[in-house]
Length: 395
Ligand SMILES: CC(C)(COP(=O)(O)OP(=O)(O)OC[C@H]1O[C@@H](n2cnc3c(N)ncnc32)[C@H](O)[C@@H]1OP(=O)(O)O)[C@@H](O)C(=O)NCCC(=O)NCCSC(=O)/C=C/c1ccc(O)cc1
Image (tube, rainbow, N blue to C red):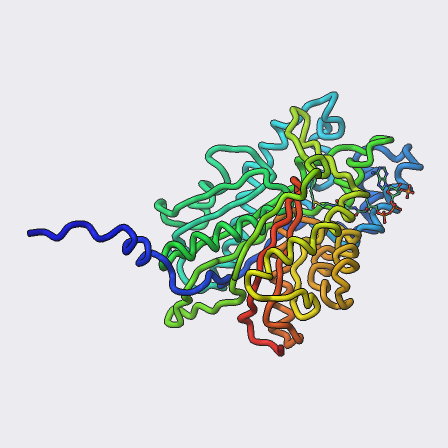
């Protein structure tokens, strides 16, 4: 007689991985168009035919110098803006369709470039990817970036896809959190995570009295970050864990739902950031979020004994985290470098910071064994992830 089905608990248990999910490889990519922050006010006011707004340009110059950004990469060039005069005034000439058309092709292509680097570093064929988690704020298409990546990367048609749209700046951390759960609950799973952003959706000309437009043009950059996540690395396949993803948490800071927001309009994306308040709101909540994440692991509040991957929302946000946690000056160096070299790339940024931390460790920089990733975004939402370093370095 045929035996009956196995016990459901046993099936579930057998399906789980033995060890924690780990980042096995990282890849990053940016558009070719490199923009120096010192040159940007001239370029922006020229491209938007706004040179007559002399006072506003001076204000914009001052703002550009305050954010901690020296360089960024943008998909939109002066040439592209000349070809789309409708982008200058999205109220008079709604241009969401044209912007989405650009994103439809450019976002998957940028994402694919980061993914190819991550897959090459991982060393296994793209067909070994079992799950795909994609996140972007830059687009609203079905089939989405996830579906486009299947042929672009040569993934299996049966790859299990999860698409996260419009999660704001905590999207990269959220995608890694989802990947961790997938990897730990599906023995042998190899999850490709990719986060890609283009700011062409936010591009408009400067307008007197509209501070948010100035912030949008001065702070944000375009890029894509990818990671391969899996549990129980296979030495025979030369898999090498870089960071173990030990535990994750997400919290909404009460009473802050209007602090950061973004909506899709027929003109373009319209964002709002309570810019002066956000650093203080994050500062007021960050210690509670960290304690909630670390205390269950038996870890205390010796913040300088950890390494840090903090989403570089702006220099003011990093300064606030530094001050509240009384961190040593070098602790946020990776976050500050990424902000300086690439700008705030929304959720992409934490993957760049992870790559920067890895690079520093491989170069022998003294690095604690344990670390924390902190990301912030609309909600206000704070994502916290406890990391364990596997890269050889000095402890
Ligand atoms: C750069 C800020 C805004 C001000 O810096 P500061 O050191 O306090 O400097 P100041 O007070 O001297 O301000 C610089 C200039 O900006 C002006 N300003 C200062 N806030 C104001 C003000 N709310 N009104 C109008 N003028 C002002 C201020 O008046 C001054 O102008 P001026 O005297 O003419 O040089 C700083 O507070 C800051 O970085 N805040 C946090 C920025 C922030 O929240 N980043 C995003 C985190 S979340 C994320 O990553 C993205 C989410 C997102 C969501 C939606 C999107 O569309 C896009 C993205």
